[in-house]
Image (cartoon, rainbow, N blue to C red; front, side, top):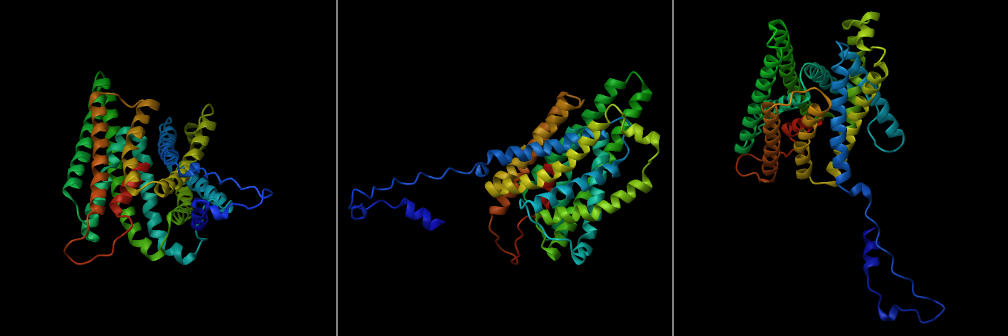
Length: 381
């Protein structure tokens, strides 16, 4: 292909001109148009849109009146995801490995950690607003960064440490803003105010569990991926295939399947919308993985990292626009500080990756550190 391009760029020599009038000179071939798939704007907007879609659809389902079938929601998302990527594989759009028992056995502990991660994520999102959930998700990055230091010989730069301080500060501001809003709006009734604060405390507790599970999942995946050499869609396929049976069993045996509870979770007036939202949330996970790979392919790693940091802002704003998240000066300040912390962290990782290794024992470089993977996962959320 390169040789053809070079030949197209050659100038015509006088000796190559046709001698006969019957052989007209062919006009130069017009330049080939640049494919639209190489335009970075399209994958970036697609990645941001799919992230917002997944977060908002999950919040829509979980914020229903007393929704408590979280395992069912996750099982439906997993089934939709497997069906979608299988259709894409059959159509030749993507490729991934066929199911292998030995690889499944090696990957099963990671799938268990993923179940803990996504379940605690749904519980936290059920009790907290989208902006607060997005801000607290940053704390996972801190846990994983120091997990890397302990178990993988990683390091934390001064700029990364500064970003961690901003992440903690944004979380404190967000929690304080939430509690103050609850007390101001429900202060006339001590019972209602206490119930609201208890709901927020439950959300913070689930968020803490989610950060720990997410950190364990990412660090464990880094260990296991060396045994299997999985790619992105291999990981997605095995994670969902191995998780579905456990999620279905947990839903059947641990959740209330009485007709009254089904009616409460799927009221007749909103039943179709809730089911469609559950399906869309499963499809959006496929879109996120595909658009992430698309962004990496048509942009630089620096651009992708910055897009992930900037993506937090529209996700947080979507909670203010589409849901009843409180819009106050402290809550907006928390979003702003969390947004800046993501940019500072991304820039710190870019500078660290560009810095040559000096001194110490040589180490095998990894294509993506666990803390960077956590940042990527938190951007998706």
